[in-house]
Length: 219
Image: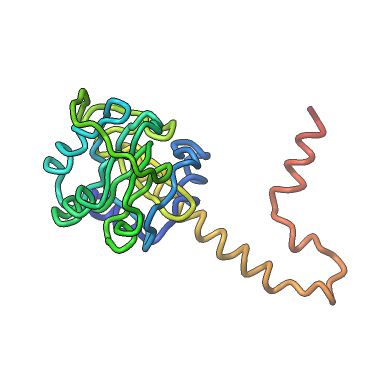
């Protein structure tokens, strides 16, 4: 499966399905939320690490990244200042960058809400950053408590941000697609159930429930 095919298939899924397919691993902290959600964000990561409260390497990354990519920034969870605002976001958008995920704060929320580039962050703050460095680009980072490498896949929506290791992406996409099918079938069963006429509710129970309870009782 090519990277383009993986991205196309991910766009039909969700962060929750992928998280389930990876046994709930590689999910960023719930603190990192969409600042201007419009649609699901899917693409390949370019990683940035910055000094707390400093955005020099985010500026650099904006000009180094390719169209369609997502900047993922280890901002160390800093609340010293916002890392980006409307000018940087507008530049990134015009260069074709799909999104920016920052373990830190942003500003100019009203302007960001009018843009197509998708921004994920911990929150908003008026104070601007320094531009002195140090920092890194395209090196392994942690963002939202999750390890991210350049070329890993990112899927983000209103439920959160999930990182898919590049070498295992095809496996996890297939698992998520199977979960999507299961959920559709399960929902159909739930909606077809008539509680006013039913005597036996076992047909509504998920198949794993009783077996799991039995295993627990044997421990």
